[in-house]
Length: 273
Length: 202
Image (tube, rainbow over all chains, first blue to last red; front, side):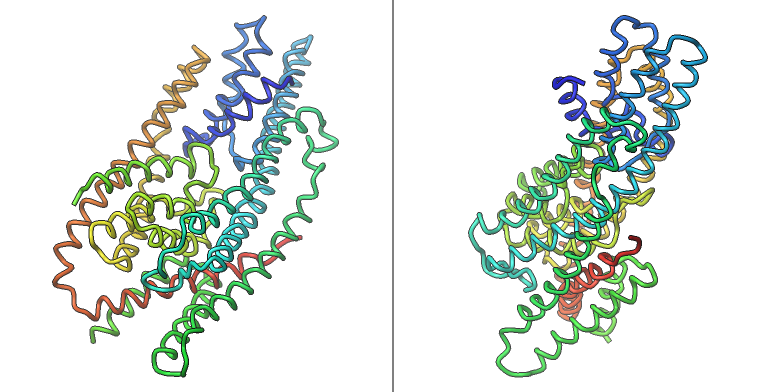
């Protein structure tokens, strides 16, 4: 795969989920991403393109960043399909291609969900929260603390944005390249990275940062009290009750927003009567 | 109530919302990024930061895994900040923002289920003329943007007007109750992050 084609697939991969539907998921997106490659591969045999595209329009669903591994692997296998000499070999290669599309998309999605949504996203959130608190943005106060500089306001969000995307775009770019070069024995390049170790360390760091954030948050929330008055106890009660309730509702798989809505309702009833 | 700044906020929010699923996925639509950006339009950056952080924390327990469709952080920030810009307190605005985001995910689910009616038509077009996939993607993006914009615009108009009518009649205790619930949001969210970093499998 040459550089212009690699770049085209990479840029088009940002639209993988456009046309997402509950029937065939990312099938339109996959066809859109792979079209430049297919047009080049079947430049001499344009009549074959409709039947090729019909295969790409079948069900496809995976994690958008890790999908890059599927693009390279499918491109590699498509070359084998295009070069098949006999009808039997062609059918064999098409079956192989379909199997890889299905199995690789499931494996990639499993890794991607755990790494990007389960670890990296909350980790970058914590990073942003720490930057904000350190630069004087106290979001615990209602209304929010006095205004700080534009740079301080945007630096935390920008840091989270760049860290998340540095990892995501690296995996996206390298994924296309590696999966095109590696074969089944290396799981199309998926085994080149130690995903489990990365996720393990990211989650451990996240746990450590969350505990730190809770402690730092409590300090920020209660630091201005000179004496233990009713207002102090009210604030401390809010922290304690909602932290405990949140942990409890998590155990019963009740979403946070329902806890908030229940809090609005309950507190209104308590205040009004 | 619909000032140019609220209108442009709805446009920007509809564009940011595309980033959640349909285009890029660069996390521009997450609360900590869309909140300050939308706050810049309304002229209150700190409110944008706070709403962004609170939105992100309250939705921290719902990830787009498998068929789960999390409520939209961009919609929540947009509705909250639009109502705030219209003169409604942040703690009331956030309640409507959250409700708006939850309802938006219901609408989105409905749209995704019904999009397959177009699918047969699109697939036929693509297999006949391969370059039709470019138009299909363009059409899907444009229609999603339009749907996002219409939803946010109508929601802000309806609930903004409703709250402006109700606000003078609300007792002071309701303000106090909603402030307390709003103050609890970061703690609810932070406590959720602890179990979310638990190692389920190694």
